[in-house]
Image 1 (tube, rainbow, N blue to C red):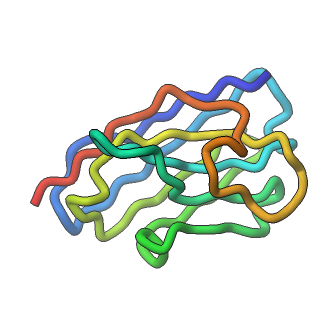
Image 2: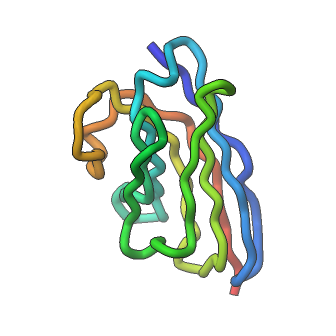
Length: 126
Protein backbone atom coordinates (compact mmCIF):
# COMPACT_ATOMS: atom_id res chain seq x y z
CA UNK A 1 0.00 0.00 0.00
CA UNK A 2 1.33 3.41 -0.93
CA UNK A 3 1.11 6.54 1.22
CA UNK A 4 0.91 9.94 -0.45
CA UNK A 5 1.72 13.34 1.03
CA UNK A 6 1.10 16.57 -0.87
CA UNK A 7 2.90 19.87 -0.33
CA UNK A 8 3.33 23.22 -2.01
CA UNK A 9 -0.11 24.72 -1.69
CA UNK A 10 -0.71 28.28 -0.61
CA UNK A 11 -2.14 31.68 -1.44
CA UNK A 12 -1.25 33.30 -4.75
CA UNK A 13 -2.57 36.17 -6.82
CA UNK A 14 -4.31 35.57 -10.11
CA UNK A 15 -1.75 35.12 -12.88
CA UNK A 16 0.79 33.67 -10.49
CA UNK A 17 2.30 30.20 -10.23
CA UNK A 18 2.56 27.39 -7.73
CA UNK A 19 4.26 24.01 -7.82
CA UNK A 20 2.64 21.14 -5.97
CA UNK A 21 4.56 18.04 -5.02
CA UNK A 22 3.42 14.63 -3.89
CA UNK A 23 5.81 12.27 -2.12
CA UNK A 24 5.03 8.57 -2.18
CA UNK A 25 6.18 5.87 0.21
CA UNK A 26 5.36 2.29 1.08
CA UNK A 27 5.18 0.89 -2.41
CA UNK A 28 6.95 0.68 -5.75
CA UNK A 29 6.19 4.13 -7.09
CA UNK A 30 6.87 3.28 -10.72
CA UNK A 31 4.07 0.68 -10.60
CA UNK A 32 1.41 3.37 -10.30
CA UNK A 33 -0.15 5.79 -12.69
CA UNK A 34 -0.46 9.08 -10.83
CA UNK A 35 -3.08 11.76 -10.92
CA UNK A 36 -4.04 15.12 -9.47
CA UNK A 37 -7.59 15.99 -8.58
CA UNK A 38 -9.14 19.02 -6.92
CA UNK A 39 -12.23 19.82 -4.92
CA UNK A 40 -13.69 23.26 -4.40
CA UNK A 41 -16.18 24.02 -1.61
CA UNK A 42 -19.61 22.51 -2.31
CA UNK A 43 -18.37 20.88 -5.50
CA UNK A 44 -17.46 17.34 -6.44
CA UNK A 45 -13.87 16.24 -6.74
CA UNK A 46 -12.69 16.66 -10.31
CA UNK A 47 -9.83 15.44 -12.45
CA UNK A 48 -6.95 17.81 -13.13
CA UNK A 49 -4.06 15.86 -14.65
CA UNK A 50 -2.53 12.39 -14.76
CA UNK A 51 0.60 10.66 -15.94
CA UNK A 52 1.55 7.11 -16.89
CA UNK A 53 3.99 4.98 -14.93
CA UNK A 54 6.95 5.89 -17.10
CA UNK A 55 5.94 9.50 -17.49
CA UNK A 56 5.70 9.07 -21.22
CA UNK A 57 2.07 10.06 -21.52
CA UNK A 58 -0.09 12.63 -19.79
CA UNK A 59 -3.70 13.76 -19.74
CA UNK A 60 -5.20 17.08 -18.66
CA UNK A 61 -8.59 18.50 -17.93
CA UNK A 62 -9.65 21.01 -20.55
CA UNK A 63 -9.80 23.75 -17.92
CA UNK A 64 -6.08 23.48 -17.10
CA UNK A 65 -4.55 22.39 -20.39
CA UNK A 66 -1.78 24.74 -21.44
CA UNK A 67 -1.44 26.17 -17.93
CA UNK A 68 -0.62 23.13 -15.78
CA UNK A 69 2.10 20.54 -16.27
CA UNK A 70 2.32 17.18 -14.53
CA UNK A 71 5.65 15.40 -14.18
CA UNK A 72 7.14 12.59 -12.14
CA UNK A 73 10.52 11.47 -10.89
CA UNK A 74 10.50 7.73 -10.27
CA UNK A 75 13.95 7.86 -8.68
CA UNK A 76 12.66 10.29 -6.04
CA UNK A 77 9.16 8.82 -5.76
CA UNK A 78 7.53 12.14 -6.49
CA UNK A 79 4.93 13.57 -8.81
CA UNK A 80 4.63 17.30 -9.37
CA UNK A 81 2.05 19.70 -10.71
CA UNK A 82 3.37 22.99 -12.05
CA UNK A 83 0.51 25.48 -12.15
CA UNK A 84 0.94 28.70 -14.14
CA UNK A 85 -1.43 31.54 -15.01
CA UNK A 86 -3.57 30.67 -12.04
CA UNK A 87 -7.16 31.87 -11.92
CA UNK A 88 -9.53 32.34 -8.97
CA UNK A 89 -11.52 29.36 -10.23
CA UNK A 90 -8.48 27.16 -9.62
CA UNK A 91 -9.04 27.63 -5.88
CA UNK A 92 -9.55 24.20 -4.32
CA UNK A 93 -8.00 21.47 -2.23
CA UNK A 94 -5.67 19.55 -4.50
CA UNK A 95 -5.24 15.81 -4.05
CA UNK A 96 -2.61 13.43 -5.30
CA UNK A 97 -3.79 9.91 -6.20
CA UNK A 98 -2.30 6.61 -7.31
CA UNK A 99 -3.82 4.06 -9.69
CA UNK A 100 -2.67 0.42 -9.52
CA UNK A 101 -4.02 -0.36 -12.98
CA UNK A 102 -1.12 -0.57 -15.41
CA UNK A 103 -3.23 -0.29 -18.54
CA UNK A 104 -4.40 2.60 -20.70
CA UNK A 105 -6.21 4.88 -20.99
CA UNK A 106 -5.15 7.14 -18.15
CA UNK A 107 -7.93 7.31 -15.59
CA UNK A 108 -9.83 10.55 -15.16
CA UNK A 109 -12.46 9.44 -12.66
CA UNK A 110 -12.17 9.39 -8.90
CA UNK A 111 -13.12 5.72 -8.54
CA UNK A 112 -10.28 4.63 -10.82
CA UNK A 113 -7.70 5.65 -8.23
CA UNK A 114 -6.82 3.45 -5.29
CA UNK A 115 -4.80 5.65 -2.93
CA UNK A 116 -5.16 9.29 -1.98
CA UNK A 117 -3.23 11.94 -0.13
CA UNK A 118 -4.73 14.26 2.45
CA UNK A 119 -4.79 17.25 0.12
CA UNK A 120 -3.21 20.69 0.01
CA UNK A 121 -5.09 23.98 -0.20
CA UNK A 122 -4.57 26.28 -3.17
CA UNK A 123 -6.17 29.71 -2.99
CA UNK A 124 -6.00 32.15 -5.90
CA UNK A 125 -7.02 35.71 -5.14
CA UNK A 126 -8.39 38.08 -7.77
